[in-house]
Amino acid sequence: MLQIGDGIACFSVVFVVVLLVTRSAVCSAVLTVSLYVLLVICRYPKVPSSRVRQVIRPSKTVKTGGVSVVAHRGGGHDAPENTLAAIREASQNGATGVELDLEFTADGVPVLMHDETVDRTTNGSGALSKFRFSELSKLDASAKHRLRETFRGEKIPTLQEAVEECLKHQLTIYFDVKGHADQAAAALREMYREHPALYNSSIVCSFQPDVIYKMRRADPEVVTALTHRPWSLSRLGDGTPRFSSPWKHHWMQVLDVLLDWAHHHLLWNLCGVSAFLVQKNYISQDYVQYWADRGMEVVSWTINTEVEKQYHQHLLKISYITDSLREDCEPHY
Image (cartoon, rainbow, N blue to C red; front, side):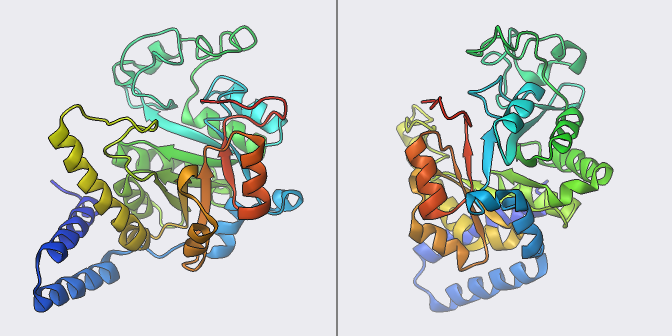
C-alpha cells in the first residue's frame, strides 16, 4: 500500500504528464488547484532559518567565510570510509562535519555502510542485508583501503557509535539515507530523542523524497535536505547508462525529466526541506541564487581539487563535501 509520500510523488508525475498531453485549460486548472490544495494539506513547514544556518554554516566556519567543509563518508581518501577512524581523522584535519551513510543489517541494526554489499570496502563478501551484526562486526573495514596497514582491524560502526564519536568531536553530521524509509526514520528519531544536540548539529539527506517526507513526519523538527543529480535514474555517476535495454533507458530518461521538475518545483516545498545537496557539475552562481531566493541552502558534492575548493569557498560561497581534507592530497575518483 502506498504511503502518503509515495502518493504525492506519483501524483506529481501524473500531474506533469497530463499537462504535457492535454490542451484543455479546464483540466489543467483543475489539476493545478488540486495540487495546490494537496500542498496546503500535506506539506511540512521548514524548520527556522536560524537553526538551518547553525547546521549548514555553524559558528566555527567564520574563519572560512561561513563555508562548511564536510568529509564525504567521513573522508574516504584519508581513512577507511564510514568508520570511527575516518570521523577522528576528519576532525583532526579540520572538517566542519562528516557525511555518513546509513544502512541496516539482517537483524535490523543501523550501521554505517554506503554499498548494498560489503565487497568493495571490507574483507567479506555478500549483501549487507544478509549479515547479522555479530557477523558484520568481525569484518575489517580497512581491508581495501589504500592506508589499510595504518588502519588495520577497523570495524564497521553502529549508528549509535558514530553519533557519539561525532558529538565528541563537535562535528556536524550529514546522515545520508539510501532507502528503508520507515526503518531509517524510526532509527534516526530515536537518535534525536537520545541526543537532542543533533537538532542543532545534523541534517538528514536522501535522493529519495519519501525518505525525507517520512523523516519529517516522524520528527518535524529535524533539518532535512534533498540530494539531487540530474539523470540519476537513467545513468550512473560516471555517465554510463544504468540499463542495457534501450527502451528502459529512454523511459528512465523521461522519468529523470519529471523527477527534476518535481524536485525543483514541488517536492522541496512539500517536504519542507532546508537545503539541496547537488552534484558539482550542475552548480553555478545562478543555480545557487535560484535556491537562495527560496530561502534554501545549496551544498555541493564531491569537491576534491584545490581549484574546486577555492571556487566554492570564495566565489560560490557555499558549503561542500569532499573525499579529502589533507592539503597534500587530491583524490581523483
